[in-house]
Amino acid sequence: MLLLKKLPKFETMRQCAQRYPELDLTATKTSLILLRVASDLIAAIHDELSEHGISQGRFTILMLLENCPEEDSPDRSLSPSDLAEMCGVSRASISGLLDGLEKDGMVHRGADKRDGRGRPVRITVKGKRFLDKMLPAHFSWLARVMQNLDEKERHQLIELVSKIDPNVKP
Image 1 (spheres, rainbow, N blue to C red):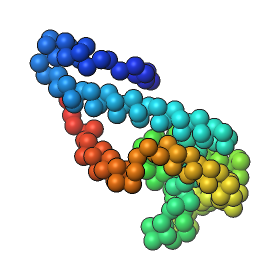
Image 2: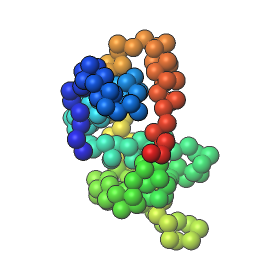
Image 3: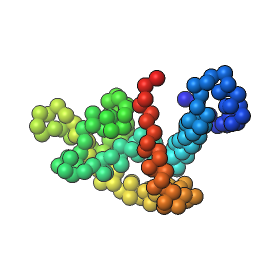
């Protein structure tokens, strides 16, 4: 994936809009800024998690398992297909991540008591200890990332970004 590091100048976009009347200047500029911030944030999260010795994929799985609501899952476990759906990745991708987490003792895959085919996944005590050790620093870092926005601005940003629909078909 290529990430745009330098945004085009507004005048450059205005000239482009003369050639392509469909180009909405503010929509294009807003989209480019959002993409830039998102890619920078993803890269920063990758670096921050690397300092704790974990990938974003493995971290996401541990957090999903740790925060698995009891009413949705009485034994506080999720199936690999549930995890794949929640992460928006293939079952094969989840299997690879789970293999590594299981090898490291962070998760346990059991047998489904109902039909024996499923393999419910649970976070282990070691996985919970890992999160307990790294999450305070991670949450502190996230607060520093957002420190230039006050509480009201954070709520406004959430509201505004929530209105964007990336599922609009071309």
